[in-house]
Length: 452
Ligand SMILES: [Fe+2]
Image (cartoon, rainbow, N blue to C red):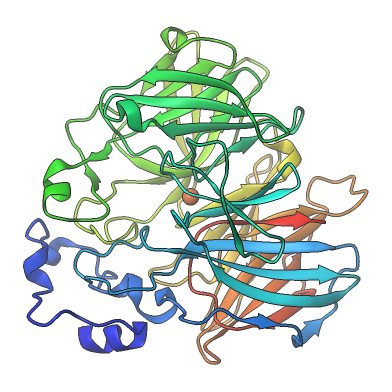
């Protein structure tokens, strides 16, 4: 079984390597039934080994003519030998997959490895440039329009999840700070011309894994949760050394946007982990409301990826800044990840959020949450078909918040190929508006629609 997985992934096991012997921390018996060693290299997690440029793409349905630009998605795509026992899904060279659309036509599909430091987690447009980014504190990698690597950006200190302020066009980011790695992070503001406008050192209680952040009208939200760097894992040669840490006090911080680290309001929270907030905003009473995909724990037993210990549900955390008190409620018990909302409503009150449903090891649908009524609907990909992060793209001149498109890559087990699917976000019961057929796009992380 394990060997078959390796062959599928196009990878080789070193002679004499003991798969289980490399991970003495693990107690496989107590892990999720869904977890199998090597799963993050098998099936549609397996990397693709060829860069392609295709211009004659088969299209089912009708591509909306107003979509002129590129749909881009980044993810890990290791190109070299991988030690299966120590391999972590979050590591390895990045590969960006892109589809360009114009006037109802699919102009091209391209996939390109990200060269250099190889950020593998997200791909964004800023200041009319394209950047591949990762949670490393390193520099983003700038890509050409055709996705070839240009080189490292001149500004360093980066994250996979900057937050764009829709009012100013500035990006806000919480990044690791390698100079004082173990007890500081940095808060950066990148202006609309892609220059660092502001940099604030924030003292921390050790080095927790901070994957994302949130922005509200008045605050920067810092998630300090109990997954921390493990020196034991580092010493044992694991490329991804973060582990669950019972000793780390979980807390969420609100730093006034123009304030100092001394002014951070920290609120305690029950132990949990979260990668991705759907959105955050301040309500009429001045509370900070955060909708977020929450896991019970992370990297406790599954040290190869995020899905073996627990799967995330959608929660709402409400923080009263005056009392420094955080309360938690469940929005939707169903497992889901990769939450998104309307890009112009980031940091503001909103009604609709979208997420990818996770069911065991499959990703069968997009969930659309009406956060005002509590109702939800879903777009089902169909048997043997698995989606990815759903990107909401507002329609030109839209007046309703959900008037727009949902775009995502879908992997079809039967054809072992993928599609860029475009759905009508107003009505998820409608069939897809269009599917653009492309080669297999492995499961990966984040992307965006970058209009021309
Ligand atoms: Fe992420």
